[in-house]
Length: 439
Image (cartoon, rainbow, N blue to C red; front, side, top):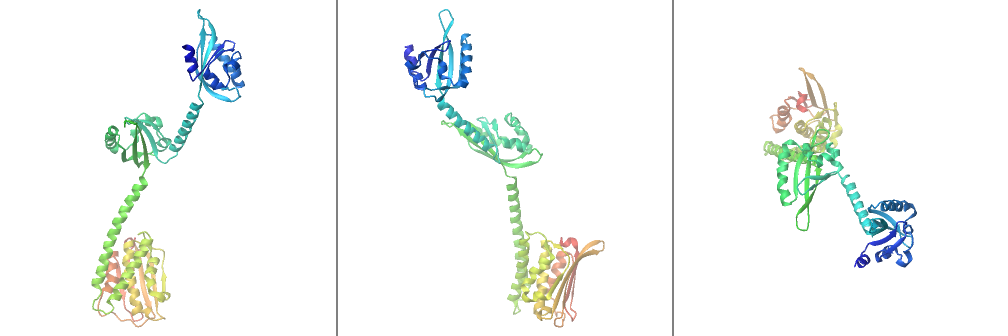
């Protein structure tokens, strides 16, 4: 029966003397090494050992002579054709009836497949760590109770805490204290149910500042549906949250400005004299002036606008008459509200100049000048429109809506002093306001 067991096993079982001479050789040994029993029995076991590993046999015999079993170890041996084979070997002493060591029994198992599988697993592990340690997210693995058992390098890079801190439960110190209780309370039900978990909370970086992270955890379950572990990531979403807030603010601003613009258009429509033959034309021109100013504001992302750019936007609609206009002044930036008020006034004055004033004749000229100065202990902004070379000017018989746009709107919006004069040589308009009103 013992012989049948030895012959049926998949492991090579070899008996040898203390001098290394092979005494027995089972069928598995023939399959593994390629030598038949008739060919190998009587030869020295060193025939199977590569030259660079001969010292292993010396150590084995030394242990066996002392009656000590040699625990399983992995090594390389030679086949009959000279090729190498990976083996796991165990060597035990064989004793006689008096307990004296008389021989050795070696068991060798072919581990080629196991090593190949191990190599694949190690390569897979290496690739996983390479990926996990180089992704932008913090990643970790927790056991079925939620205790962290692995974390990637990103955790230490961001928090400044060691991975050991995370494994020992000290990761909670990085979570904002105002959110700790909420996050832990939301996590507990999923640990019991195995449902995927998601939450957003601030984590403290090694610089002491908090950033917002979106965390997601997915349970890994066995075939019975029992949770084995959790795989989780935390993605920095600070910029995304800030962008969402900016978009929301922008939408509110667009809504606010749209309502303001509609109110202005309604006012223009109500104030423009319906009885005039050019009612539609004048209304369209005024709306075009508003649209031109809006284009500048949008192009400047609703930030401050240079005076020169605001004026040019309004004068583009004047066609060839633009060559009759000169602009002079320093670089001064207008707030969106100030630009809107001044743009309406300049559009109105430009339209009047084309119809009745200096721009209605080729020899007419318009000079626009602006400056920053001091007055009354505060900074002042001044701008003027001066016409010359046009038909003789006469003061208007009545104050229409155009006059309100040139005088009342900027006066109220900019806390300005407005002067509108009608000398025969040409219309003159000037504005003076605190510099703070345009900024």
